[in-house]
Structure formats: structure tokens, C-alpha cells
Image 1 (cartoon, rainbow, N blue to C red):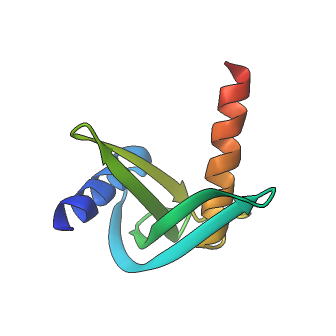
Image 2 (image 1 turned 90 degrees about the vertical axis):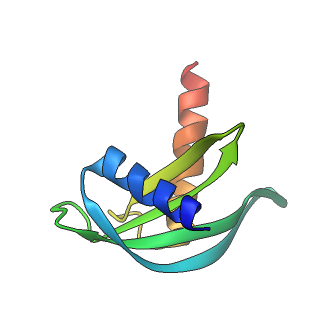
Length: 99
């Protein structure tokens, strides 16, 4: 588990250039059209020294030895782990539509 948290904090540093402090883990299930679009645990971090946001939401999984990690800053409309997942799903869908 430490390896996972280390990967998340490294991703936050890489994506947002700020340090972070673990707050907690929240289970999230996002459904669309009666089907599960995403289900997992979102790790909540306080950001230390970031002028844009006080929180960051992160989750991921290991795929073939590489970490696939998503980080989302807590900037409205992102105000919770649930809204972070919704925004990430919408962002991914938009990027797939563009090709």
C-alpha cells in the first residue's frame, strides 16, 4: 500500500508541482444510464503551498508495472471525491471524441 501512496504523491508533485498530505480514502461509485461508469477508492490529499487549490483527489492502478494515475485539483466544480471522478470521466470522454 505504501508503494501506491508514494506513486500518488509523486503524481501530484509531477502534475501540480506541490507537496501533499494524506487526508483519507473515500469509496466512490459513479453510474451513468444505470450502469457503473467507475468504481473505486479516491484518495484525498491536502495540498501544501498551492495557490490554486487546497485539495487534490487521486486514484490509480498498476498496469504492467506502470502506474496509471489520475489527479484532480479541488477547484470548483470539483468539491468532493465524487465530483472529481465525474470531471475526470467527462474529460476523458472529451479527449476520446477529439481523436
